[in-house]
Length: 395
Image 1 (cartoon, one colour):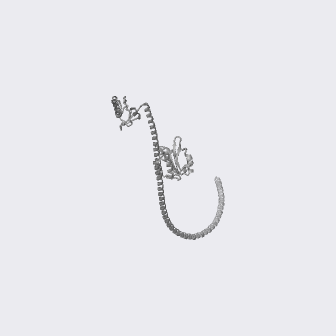
Image 2: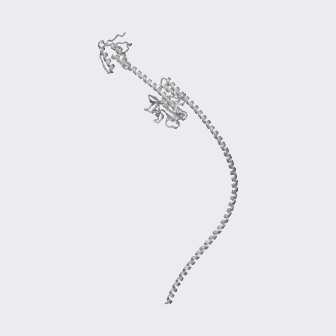
Image 3: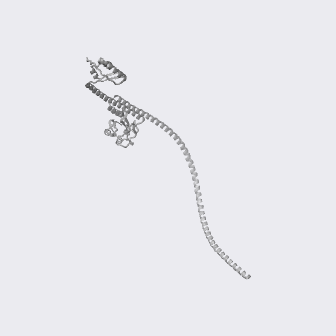
């Protein structure tokens, strides 16, 4: 029994030993493989080491070259530093010279600017005086014309002529508008050629243009640069004529604008504030004179109509044997019609009065008539009476 147990134990031990040997062989194989890998890696390291040696030699060579270049650069930098110092010295000298030159230039510019301003102010003053004289001459001659002319057409003609000859405008014209058809008719001009007159003789103006705006009530309509106005036949025509700027002013009658006074210049922005103010004054003066002519014309028409009406009234009174007697109660002024003298046989030298009238009545009717007349004078009420009269025989 003991031998069997020992035999079993040995068998088990042998199996264990065999297993351990198998494991050792596996480990040995693995170590062999690892050693081969390690040998390969060592070979690679040796190759890299050889390569590093070569690279280090190259690096040493390159560093030697760099040191040479560094030495050369240091020498060059010293030379460059010296040159820069010389340049800085020259720059400082130039800077000082430039400062002096700049100062001198500034002084020259100041003197030039002062001289320019002085000359400009002098030219402006001269231009202002010349312009003022021109405008004064224009206004003065316009007013003289207004005083001396006797009719509207002469006024318009002279106003246009004065605008050219005294106002130094390039063209001037006056037109009367028909607002219903939006057309304007040229009535006077100066400086206009045949094409201007032909175009303006019956011109259909724009609803947005200067004529329309002026007719609607503007004191003036200014176009400072006609080259920017490209619409309409008249604007194209003004460009062909060389007009650069224009102003449109109203011509009025009885407070209503009935036409325009248009002026043109060959200069852009010609009409300044003072110019516009004077031109408005001239247009107002022309309108005032035109209004007086119109009032006189209307008065003459009324006078002619009154004369005609009075003649017809006298004729009617003569035919109908009717007379009228008028009294201004404020001034106690009496008026008798021609037929009044005829009916009562009174001399024309007889001064109209209530007493003179009552003197020709029949004595029996005079009292009643006197009371009726006195009542009418006192109360301003209508009344009537019937009376006989004694017709006097004229001497």
